[in-house]
Length: 192
Image 1 (cartoon, rainbow, N blue to C red):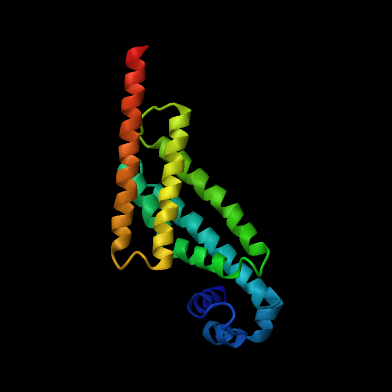
Image 2: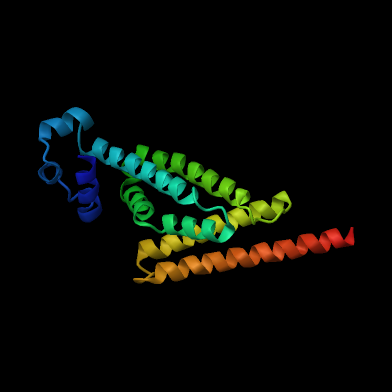
């Protein structure tokens, strides 16, 4: 039922989706929906929670094979601009003002994703040893690059195939920042 609701909410929006739309696609009944979810709003919340879990799972799976910086950055950008992440953001945007629990789900999910990303970034075998302020600046730059790429995808400013170009741009900028920080660290060590 959650999958049917997800599809309907993403296709038609919350207001235009009816309980009958969800029930007809899921093969369930109105009674079952009301027993398990209590109504459309609670089902919407369940869909958002499930989508948040999907994004965390997708990121964890993608990062499991990414031990080098380039594969890590590609994996992060693929997940961040992928269907699950964009669907989660759309679901949150649509109902965050009308449903108090929806922003809370998003607020709880973001730190989990950030922690996964940042911890894995530091663990990349080819990530340079940098002072903490530089490491944090890199993490912040990556998170801003992700947000920018997601915004372009959400708004339609990124056309078909442009996601890859956006991802490459974020990767290029972060790689340049890492190289600049490495040079600055080496220069600083040379002066000491």
